[in-house]
Image (cartoon, rainbow, N blue to C red; front, side, top):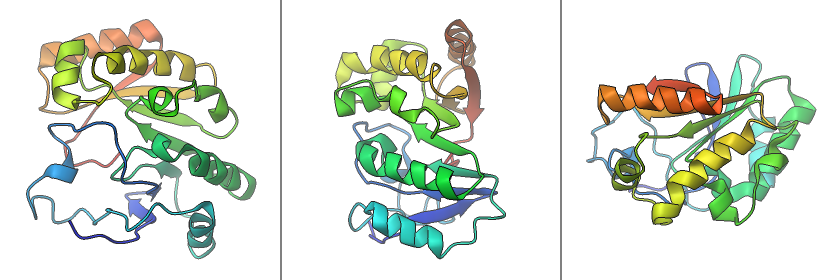
Length: 207
């Protein structure tokens, strides 16, 4: 895969921040493993190296963000793999811009960082979108193929439960066509039981 240093990129009316290539999952539907040119409209986001906070700050200072309605931590990798830079960047955004900040995550940040990271989001993150992918732990594991195996699904649920305490809006997502309608209905029930939102997103979406 071609490598570049695309740190900031646009999707519709949101500005996205690409922090890392690292991810503890190997989802069966991930665009990272799609055939070449299957999604020719999606910009190459594979990083030459993980950007430092200074590199991200420099990109922001060269970018007009006034027309964006949201800033989103999301790229080819899992943003919480670069937690320190994520928090530094979120703090910088809050100090300099009046734009909501979202994290798109697989919900495994606590396992990745070996601690509950959700309290660190307070005052910095306005919404968290968590890739649930299935209501069934076994289907989830077969689809997402996390390195944490059976620890992953309950950790994801706990992450959502904890995030609610510190983040105004928490949403579970699944990808359209990757699970059954029955499973989608159960995902909605699961989201309601935890008091979080639920959204079905399109396959090509990076959000």
